[in-house]
Length: 559
Image (cartoon, rainbow, N blue to C red; front, top):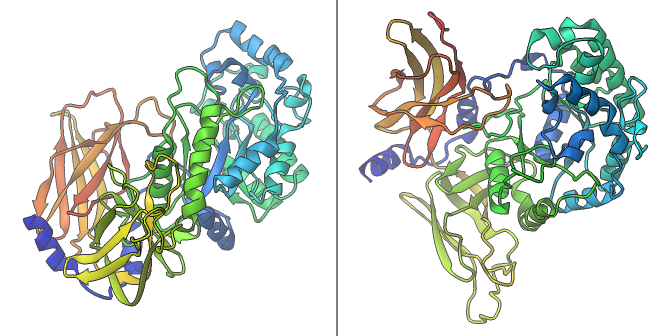
C-alpha cells in the first residue's frame, strides 16, 4: 500500500490529455513472426477507420476434410502417399452438407453482435469452397455441387454483415500435382519461388474479387506481397488484414496499439470441427477476450467450425447465444471505441468512444456481482467533471424487480484517490439470478486523472561463453511515479505458426527504478535448441504495461 499511495500522489493530476499518453503507449515492435511491411499498406484510411469501428467478426473454418474431424489441411504435411491420394481423390466424393443453411449462421452472427464475416474460400489443402475454374479440386465437383462461398457471402450481406474472405497462397494440391514436397513455412513452397503457383493463386484471387460483388475484408494466410497488390487493384476499398496489419493468432498482445490490428482466436482449441479433443472456452471467457481485445484497440475475429453436414455444433451455438445476450445489452461499449489511457485497472477494463463522448468500464470480477447488491468501484484513472453522468448499460437505474423500496440509481463522487462509483446490477437477465458476465458502467464528460508509465522492449545479446541471454529494455516515462518495478517476461514459441502464440508468459524477477532509463537482466538456463520471445514490463499498482514482443535467436551478436 505504500507504493500505491506514493504513486497516486504523483499521478493524480486533473485535466491531462489522454491522447498523447495513448500515442506514446502504443509504440513497440511488431508481434514476433509478423514479416509484413505495414508501412506500404494501401488500405484506405477511411476503410481502416470503418474496420476498427466494427470490433467483432466471425471466422468460419470449413473445408472438405471437416468430414474427418481432423485439423484443417495440415494433416497433409508429412502424410504418406496413400493418405495424400485418398485426401485429394476420395474426400470430395463424400462431401455433401445436406443441412447447410448459411442464413441461419448469419442470423445468429448478427444476434451475437458480429459486424463482419471471414470465410475460408481456400485453405492450405487447396480445396476451393467456391466455383473455381482453376482446379477440379473444389466444391462443385462434390455431391453437394453448390457454390458455398457465394451462398455464405449472400446470406451474411442480407443480415447487414460485411463480407470477407480468407485465402491461402499456400496450396498443397498444387504442390502435389507439381511434384513438390508438401510443407509450409520454407521458401521452396512459397509463391515467390514458384511462378506457376503465383499465377495460379492470382487467377483464383481474381475469381473471388470479380465474381462475388464487393468484398470488405480479405485475410491472406501466407505470403501475400504481390497478392495484396492485386486485391487492392481489383477492389480499392477492400481492407487487407493479415498481410497488411498485425494479426496475432490465439493470443492478445500485452499492449494497446493506436492502429488497426486483429486477433483471430478459436472458440475451442481447433479451427475446424473436431468432435474429439476440442475444449471449448466458456461464454464468459469469450466475452473477456472480446473486451480485452477492444480495450487494446483491436478487433476480435472469433472462429467457429461447422459440422460436415453444415450444422453448427450445439456447443458453439450455445456460446454464440451467450455472447448475443451480453452484446444485446452492452454492444455500445464494443463498437466505434478506442483505448483509454490505460487498458484496465485490475478487473475493470476500459473502452472509450472514439469521439470522446463516453468512457466504459467493463467490470469483470472473479466473483460475479449478485443481482440487487450495491457495489463500489474506485477508478484511479478517471476524473469527473461538472457534467459527468454515470449509468449501467441496459438498466434504467429506477427499478429493481420485486423490491419496490429500492431505487438502484448509480451515484458517484470524486475523492483524492479517484472516482468512486456506487452502483448495482439491477437488470434480471436469467431466471436463476446468477448470470456471471461483466457489467458495463458508462461515464460521460470525464477526463484522464493520470499519465501512465511507458516501457519499450530493447535489444538482446546471446553470450556464447555463459550460454545466457542479456535482455535490455527502456523505461521511457515514469508517469509521475516516484518508483516503479521493471523487468521482463519470456515464453517458448517452438512449434507455433509465425502468427500464433499459445504458451504462458514466464515472469522474471523485477527491479526497482526511480527514474527513466535503460535496464537489463540475464536470462539463464534455456535449452539451446529452443526458440523464445521476450518483452519488457513495467508494473505499478493498477496494472502491468508492456513493450513489444521480440524473438530471441541464439547468435553470437544478436541485434
